[in-house]
Image 1: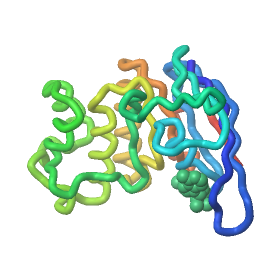
Image 2: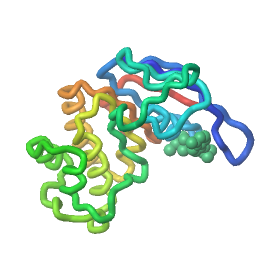
Image 3: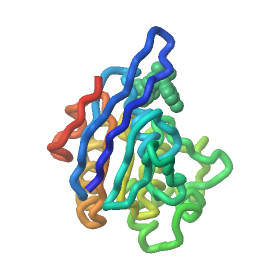
Image 4: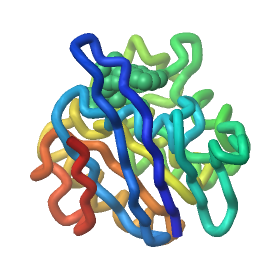
Length: 205
Ligand code: ADP
Ligand code: MG
């Protein structure tokens, strides 16, 4: 069970906008987060991962307090161990596909399985600049899964994939999430693209 109750001002260019989220997420559930551009979707994921501090609130995961601004508790991101798929991928320019994976994890059998699911087995020696946009995006997803995270945060993770690739990947990921018991929060612009993956949603305005 994940309990999020946070409130913070967003540093918007025009006027003052607040991000306020009070929600519980059941362990193992997959939740789609949507809302207009600039509403704070990326900021929310970064707050949960520990990259951004909100002004007020708390985050409790499986009974462990990750954040409590009142008692000045904030567990560092390394300890929260969330898997994070960044909207702009955040790949390492000088690392090959395989190096991205081994940097995160050492289980070669698991890495091999992920590379197959992401259709990157034949690109292991490639650096990001020699990958297509879709391949880079799939690498960002696989890298986040390499650590077998209990909580996976995905920021518009399928935006560069064509519909066929997207639906194939989604059905494989769904099985993996169940196998790992991973709770997944997915930010998406196009609610239809996640069809079949999730029944839960969080609308932030
Ligand atoms: P979305 O992902 O929904 O498009 P973002 O979370 O990227 O929205 O940004 C929402 C607003 O929050 C933007 O106006 C942005 O300038 C602002 N913002 C970005 N980072 C922070 C931060 N660390 N703290 C507060 N506001 C932020
Ligand atoms: Mg965003």
